[in-house]
Length: 289
Image (cartoon, rainbow, N blue to C red; front, side, top):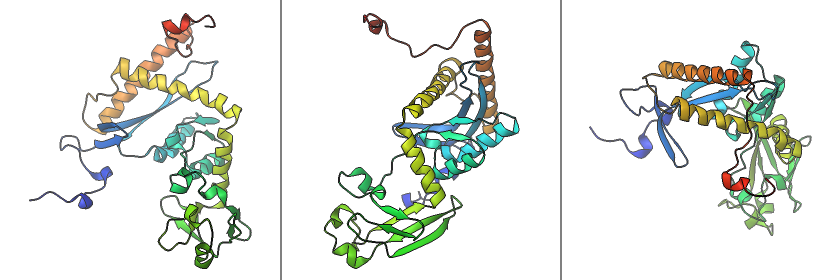
C-alpha cells in the first residue's frame, strides 16, 4: 500500500474526510478550513414584517453556492414563497443564473465576481470590455482596427449554454504595436471567450446596475442575513454538528431555524423591531451621533 500522488487524488466532492462521517467533506475558503457541511439560509426582508427564515438547505461543504440557487428557488416556489427580488451573495450570481431567474420572474440581485484574466488586472491592458462585439456579423473589433477572423459557438456541458470562441489573425496580432498589452500567448495570437448573447448582455446589465445608487440602497437589505448567521452560531451552536450524517445535521439546522423564527416572531409581537448597525460607546460620544 502506498499514498497516491497529488495529481492522482480523487475530486474533493467524492473524497471522505473521515470514515466515521461519509457525507462530510473538507472545504477551504481563503484562510478558513472545516470538515462537514454548508447551510444556506433564506429570509424575508420586508420592513413591515418580522425577518423570518423562509428556507434552509444543507449541502456538502464542497458544493459551490451557485449550484444551489435553482434548488432554493424551486422549493420556495413549490411552497408559494417565490421571491420577487432575491438578494444574494456574489457566490450565487452567474450569467446563466441571471437569465434563468429572469425567465421565472425573479429579479436576482447580487454583486458579480470580477474577471480573473491578467488583462483585467493590469492597467492599460486590453480586457474583454475593450473589444466591440458585433453579434449580427459574428465578429469582434479591436480598438487598433483589427477584426477577428474566426467565430465558433459550442455548448458548455456544465452550463448547457453555447459559448463563443473568437480568434484574431496571427499576422495582424504580430504586427500590432500593442500586442504586449493584449496577449501573452506563445503564438502571439489573441483569443477571446465569452457566453452567448443573452447571457453576455445579462451580465453587462448586472455590472452596470451595481454602480447605481438604487442598487446599493436595495442591496443593503442583504446585510441582515449576516446577523442571522451570527445569531445561529452564537446562540444556537450552528457550527458544531451534534449528530452524524447529512440528514441528521439538516434536521439540527431546521430545528435551529425554527427556534430563531419563534424568537423573532415573539419579539415582533411584543413590539420590538430589528435595530440598525450597532454603534460603539466611543462613537456615541461624537457630537453628531
